[in-house]
Image 1: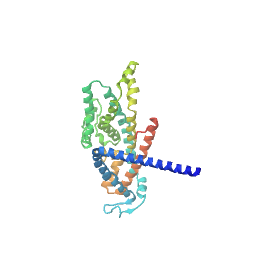
Image 2: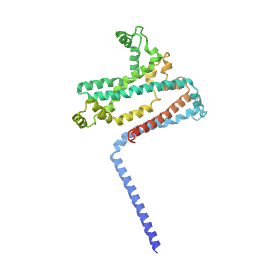
Image 3: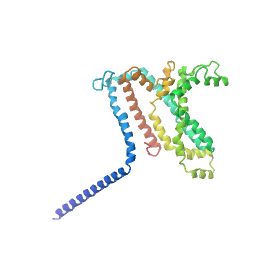
Image 4: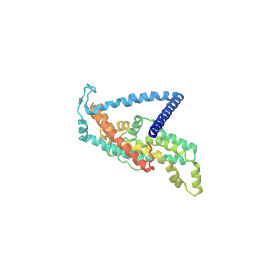
Length: 331
């Protein structure tokens, strides 16, 4: 009898727990529906973006099957001949591809070395300025190149770097460039040209996140440091820079993940037959193989391989920054 009573009580307890869970689930659903009804204008604004991403981002992913086919303009995904990993084998034995990888890594690392640090330095300098009108003027001037396309900036660079261009005139003014040359015809100088022109275009725009973070720093920290006798450099080192830690980590992760990416617009504008050995990057190589020569399968295989490596770099950089930020992930 006692055992029977315990079983009955146990059954009642289980039923009550199930009823409680059901009531909680119903409450969550009702709360979700209530919140959705209250926020339906916001959801309606998001829907077009979701549709855009599905159509232009997720559906085209199916096109990656071309990397495993011998695809031509006369084929469809269903009729193209499957070749397995043959395209990837050709890539590994293609010296021109590895030349583009070398150029991409070299230019990207130089851009990372200069372009990653330059916005931080400029943002700190702007933040430290006390003259309001001058600060706004410098911000506006530094932002301006970002809004100009590489077609415009490339035309300016081609003119400035020509034999009679601005750069050679400046060199001659200081006693150099006795035999002026067109610098874009010098393959050995292309990496530096690509790096400096990219920094010039994007350094001002890159300060926006840093300045936004610095605007949230409590001014009392600087006042307390000043009372303790700290100078401006010490306050920058111990207050300003640490307040940018998370933004710097985020930009570092994104920069590392894009090492195999390249600015195709910049390359197509500044590239010429003479500097092509130094200017051919993965992006322009894929463009030439896929669009110009019509080898869609090969170009797709290259793109798929670089995307996988970029994902690995992203996860690795995120893991490194997570350890440096007390196991606090920024992604």
